[in-house]
Image (cartoon, rainbow, N blue to C red):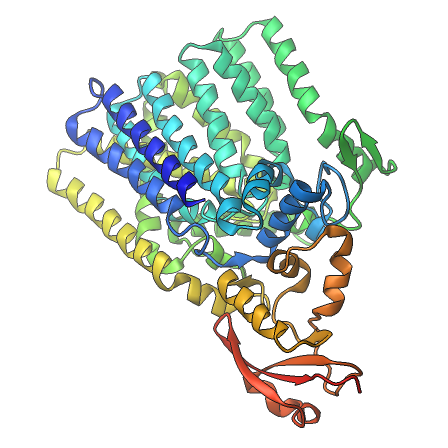
Length: 540
């Protein structure tokens, strides 16, 4: 795996060098340097300590196990073959887990291997974005500004350094925009690729469904108006898109129209007992208008501060670096003002980005604010912040002020990077925002190996969210997964059970289990929490 990462980084570095060289007649020397260094930073950030930072999150573990199970047994944990929409954890998108199947086959249950495609796609998507802007002859200051903000956007760096099923929406959405922009610059086949990617977004994140139809229709009309596609192209693009969407449309019919589960070609289509889709939306009880206004206000606050008012915010942002978010928010506003003032001179590429941004309004209005549910919105705001930064470079005559602003952003980025690869994982795991729902894989495997040495039949009080983690920590045939859950249990009885067993008690709760204290014990630690493990190796 290390060889694959090394080769990938070398290829990406060469690509960045070639891109910078290609743009040499369009960008000034300082713009070339800023663009190249920004993209290099992004590359090394995304691939550095990929398997260790952050800790393995519960939903990430679900998807990794399903990918591994498909690679080795042809079915996921629910014994479904090529599920269109996974039944796991209240429903998960399947595109990413299928992308990782070859790596799970080649490298086994490996966190680095599972996260590798996310890092690779993210880096490629932003490199291609810069190339697409160059091909559209965008202002060189704007190119440099976008390269900087997209490569240093803290939420994006964090979002794509791990591999939630829905995280793949970020690079896939950027790549979709990339190829539409490339198509605007000339080559029609780029537009076809863009529409294929646009259709595939439906398999990335269910929360984006409320905006994708608007983006699709707008893109068709925009390209037709600009005479980039013909009526025959529209028919062909719609047919291609429908073919791609047939499986997910089949799922929606089963889930929401009550059709029975069925197999379609090589896909399995089954309904979820209960979906988490509603959890992504605002509440429609009470005064809905007030709810919408409060939600939008919270989303703007997240843009300006990086803070999210929910229990999982530390997985997508570290609020103590508010200055970085505030400066980018100011440049976002600056871009909106400047683009509006000069709207008659906007290029096709800028007008397309404006249109795509407007198609995200359903998400802004109906989806709960935050990096989890607004990823496409925050991609576009990061892009507009870069445009604003570039326009600031273009219009400001105060060189010292430019250096000051860029210096502040660089300092914040440096502090953030140092913390992220330093103490962040420790703090994130120790916080245990949902009991045991983020773990250090190396520590956890060692913990399990030490427990196995006790040679008992049942382990009570496992400090992990069993359903998601145990299949990853002890790779198990999905047909036998229930047996694994029976052996390693999260419940902790306060009395001695029949048969050989171990009882894993948090060190600060030992006094709550007086009936276990007659047993031999050993002290252990995992995920920065200390435990006392009582064990009974006898059958009585």
